[in-house]
Length: 323
Image (tube, rainbow, N blue to C red):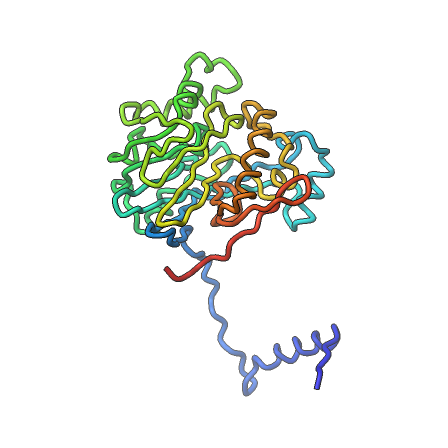
């Protein structure tokens, strides 16, 4: 027998369920609202390596107008609302993978740190690590995709001292030189330069400069991705035949900069070069069906990218809850 439920019968069912909470004329006790959330970390295996993703917290960019350029404001808002996203506030995540190879504990990017340039929800990476049971002193390597505020901001603490005292730091020399240049302190890049100097200069003697194509740590290979910054780099992370590509800021948004990858992003140093790099590398990733781990996509950032018309589509991976 087939049962058909109309809207009216569903409403009646709901009313009946409400009445069923009364037993013997006495209301069931109401549990208090807890007001807590699950810790902001997620763990999975990559071949023989253990990967723990930790969050620095959501980063709200605000209205898309002026930030995403080259497509009309109305079309951008429609792209967001068509995907059930707030058309008036673009919110990015900050997902940092920590890869335990057995020999090395490697952190990719460090979040906003003490800066509240994008509001109060950022700066929780150290808390997320503690929730995940990872000690900052155990980090052997900190790999920086580039030197923007939200990627190197958590290298030092409030006191200016390094938070990862036993780590070496990896970044391109082009990005280090560009964002620590005191000559830019009088430009509109001042805040970025101040923040980069605050975080990078205290660990200058521990920085190792990396190059395109170099496997600078076991299982970690650099892929040059210039445009967003002069030395922006993404990384292939591999273990026992499994791999993912850490996207850094190749694409900030899983809808806007994938469906229309030639759209320009106002925080790019060279927006046209960034768009060309984005299309080239996303095409390579999609063609080779390489899994991705994105710093800014919806938590926890793992998935796949496929070609879709003139752009691409992101397919988030299901969270695997067993190691």
